[in-house]
Length: 385
Ligand SMILES: Cc1cc2nc3c(=O)[nH]c(=O)nc-3n(C[C@H](O)[C@H](O)[C@H](O)COP(=O)(O)OP(=O)(O)OC[C@H]3O[C@@H](n4cnc5c(N)ncnc54)[C@H](O)[C@@H]3O)c2cc1C
Image 1 (cartoon, rainbow, N blue to C red):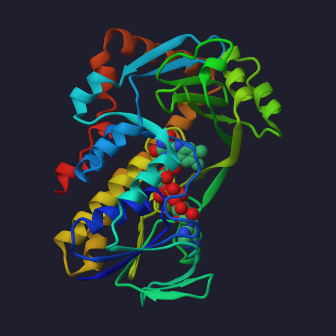
Image 2 (image 1 turned 45 degrees about the horizontal axis):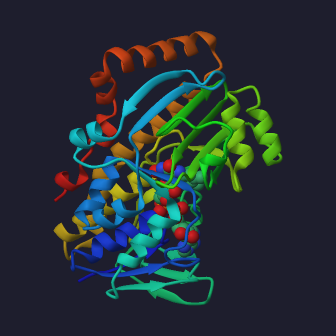
Image 3 (image 1 turned 45 degrees about the vertical axis):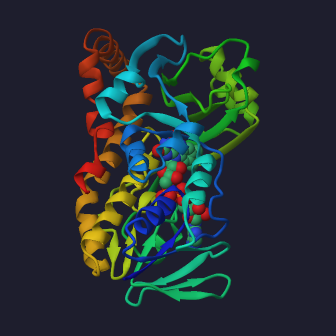
């Protein structure tokens, strides 16, 4: 039985801890700088490639009880709100992918995952890891504690300090854009009803997406734009768009903004006894619904490799990397392409994109859905059982 240390109890770290613990092959210890289970209430998509992992972990009933079932995804023009395309995500997607498309606040998911951990997983709050020695598998914490493991899984998020400290080759490029996320408690307070389901609004150099967070009317959103100085300023930036967009921004109770950064894929995630996972390994631009899903897939694959390669955790980590690098690299390139396609200011490119979206969705819906098979149809559970 090997000893596995996991640094970071976000969605990636928590799912990894759960998946490894359920194999009963290894000892798992989870370290978190804040509190295990705590997270921002950011809106989160859970597409079928992620929800099927939770089903395999036996968590589907709990998830279904507290998530929103997205029925459709619509793409609209920013200014007029004209619907360009509709992708069915309800029964049709369920039948196609055999797993639901859900959405929920991020903290609700981390609480659910944390409550599913049993006492066999040691959990340490207020353990901010400052240093890792990849040769020895030693980890040091700001509070003066230290520990040693046969394998250290680094899942400390997109802006991973440890990835930088270990000298993994990746560099963030600033895009000069800002991502703002927020939520409104009840859309009944808006002057007009929002279109149902997940909605993406497209315009030159800006992008706005919103989706229901529960069955009671809460809505989460993400706005990508040039940097704004205040909530009013952000609403003004979208002022020439459909009035509903600015209304959602104005009514948000809490806004949180971060610069949008773009990362090139890394060629390796492993160094000695250290392996990267989740956003620390493959941070994504925010134009897909796949960041958390990739971390969840990573967690499942790593746990299966650790079970299959038992008692050789380093070989397991290499195998995990071998299986995951290409998919995650493809997703990072896809997110970059989406960033350009969804926000292009080029009038000709806008026409081409809009016509393709409209015709595909209206006349070839099966074809439109099939384009997402590589995302939602990816079945890491069946592939790595
Ligand atoms: C605004 C916003 C909206 C998003 N929306 C979506 C979405 O709709 N769909 C989607 O798929 N994804 C979304 N994401 C991304 C998603 O949250 C992450 O991809 C997902 O949570 C997986 O991340 P992770 O576990 O790898 O890292 P994180 O969730 O970032 O977790 C990292 C954890 O490590 C801890 N930590 C950090 N440093 C240390 C350290 N040195 N020592 C110990 N602990 C440490 C942190 O406290 C945190 O708990 C969104 C992200 C943001 C910011």
